[in-house]
Length: 57
Figure 1 (tube, helix red, strand yellow):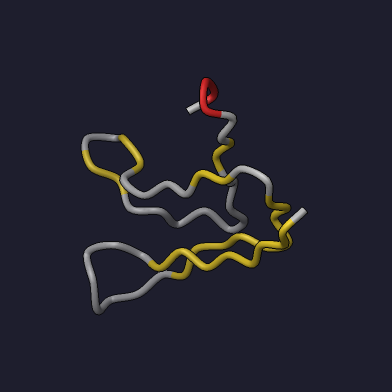
Figure 2 (tube, one colour):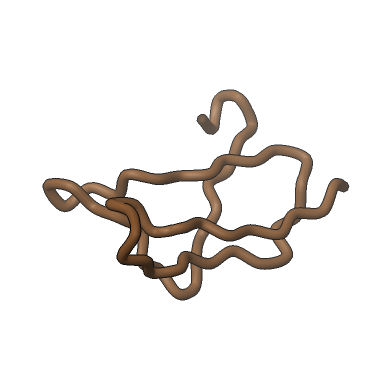
């Protein structure tokens, strides 16, 4: 991803789903500023929700 100029978002709080100790869900961005990134625990899915607010640069 670095080769393409993409950076991974970090989440606070971090409730991303894992399998075998590895995080499943990622969002990569380029040319955008992260204003807010969080995960939301849910019981209705096997993946927790990712919620982000981005701003174009």
